[in-house]
Length: 53
Image (cartoon, rainbow, N blue to C red; front, side):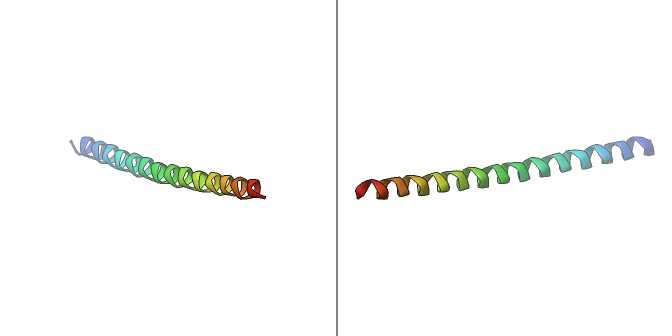
């Protein structure tokens, strides 16, 4: 029975680790998406300002 408890503990730890990795990946993806949009907006601003002259 102690073997079964140890196995469940490892499964719970693996599940926790997977959730942590998934959360970190989503945060990283959100930062990348935000930064890409910010950069694209800056480039569009440069084009708009360059078109004025």
